[in-house]
Amino acid sequence: MTAPFIHIRISALLLMLIFGASAVFAASTSTNFMLDSDQLDAGSDIATSTNFRLEGTIGQFVTGTLESASFTTSSGGAAGSAGGSSGENPVSPVVSTINFAYTDGGTALGFSEGITPGLSTTTVYVYGTVVDGNGSGTITGVTSAFYRTGATDSCTPNDFNCYTPASSCVVTATTATAAHFACRYDIASFIDATDTVGTFPSDSWTARVTATDTSNFTTFTTADIEMNSLAAFTLATSTIAFASMPLGATTTASTSQSITLSQAGNVAADVMLSSFQNLTCSQAGFIPKENLKWSITPVDYTDVNAISFTSTPVRAFLNVPRKIDATTPTGTTYFNLGIPAQGLGGLCEGAIMLNMIPVP
Image 1 (tube, rainbow, N blue to C red):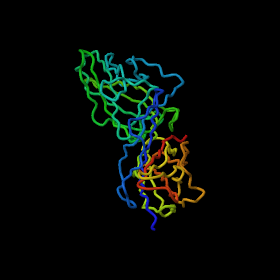
Image 2: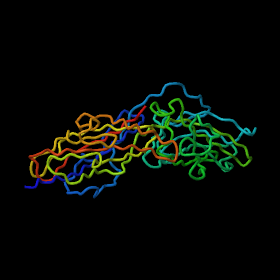
Image 3: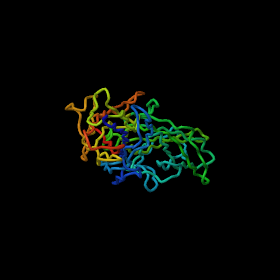
Image 4: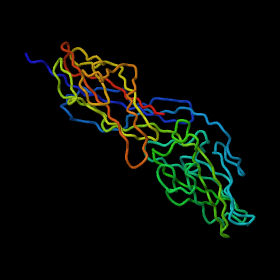
């Protein structure tokens, strides 16, 4: 009698950490990780979704003193410092407030709260008020730059530490002597992080805002804010598909399956691997979760470097570095499977978890 074949497909759920200011770490509404019960041949029906992730925040504390400001900031606004003037006009335009927010006029982000980049481009507004005693109608324009403080305001624009507005700053008169300005920035997910777990913890990010009036007088003001760390991966595939396997069979280095993780954040990152349930079969029996093994190189199921899944997360030590140029760093995890010799029937399903962690 020919031994029956078992068909397996494993779906992986990737978890992501975002480091911000609040002490909350909440799971998303994604469903539990599943092994799909559909019959698959090797390499078929590979899912490409990269939406599996867990988002949360981890609190941080910033010590030290902020520069004194010669202007006031709105409640919740970032710390600021006054700049110089290129003229002697006693009523030169003055940038009196600078705020950071995700929308124009939105809730101002505090210095320690910081800006949290997302997995794709994140829009940030630098907005505030310009005052000119000669009248708001004499304010001819506002320009701005946004840069990691250590890069200085003379930096060359790039996606890592130096930005110019996505379009010209918008100036709108609000009173006889005051105008609202808004400068939009589109920041990348891999923008340099300056919070306590970021690559540049002794730095911050600075917005420099310059106002000009009809007399061609200018003044500038700066304000600082933290840029939070984003530890994130995207998956090249979210499904592990094994070929049909007979009872008692095990995979080898050549038949093992893999998932490639691409750096999607702004800090070096790794994964913790675990599984919380056995692979249950539709007709009879189950495959113990320990029969599913992982490694960071392609090896046989019986190799000492193939590690069984357990409910306790184990670090893979992929140590995928942060992105520093046009090349996106990646890491690959390999999977092997052992089928019990008897007691199974039908199609089997179970669960695995890939849990994101930052690497110091």
